[in-house]
Image (cartoon, rainbow, N blue to C red; front, side, top):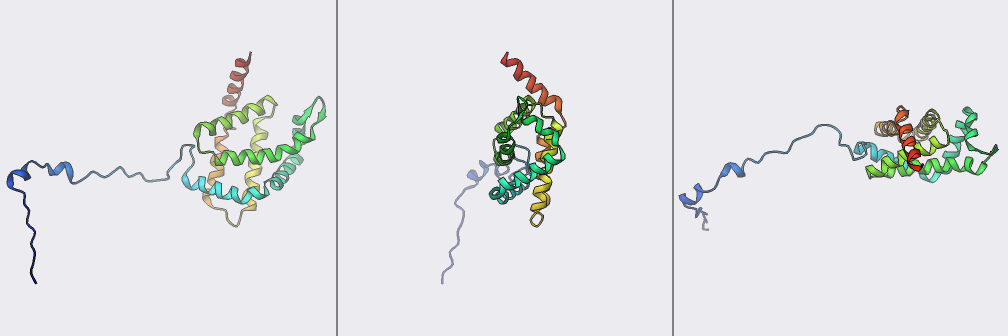
Length: 192
């Protein structure tokens, strides 16, 4: 058996023209510790938990919406005045609102584009402001939905799902009525 040795063919002159420090060692990228956030402000785990939870809810969204909304209306019966047109209760809008509410939240959870995400939230505030629905009632209904969903999914509930729902509640900006009201006033002044 013969041994083959490999020798460098570079001469002393060639090796002096290579700047080894520019090649090695290569600087490591900055390491960020902590959660990674998407464009809408959710961590990746929260977004995934919300989407997976909503996939479990979706087949039952009509029933869950009715149960949540019925319980909410029993506690806040004066809210039904928002569904009156010329003194007459519009049952179609009242019953359709629960399903529309569930489908709206599905669209908000599935939305990836931060611009559309914010527009959906602002449109929701504007529509409800025009109908004189208080932010408190909107917040209570969303909190009831969150509690109901967490109760229904208690066997598969996680910390990421709970924090995702908390972050979703924060995104609606119920604690900043002046922001949503100023948007409504601006839109109303544009129409004139």
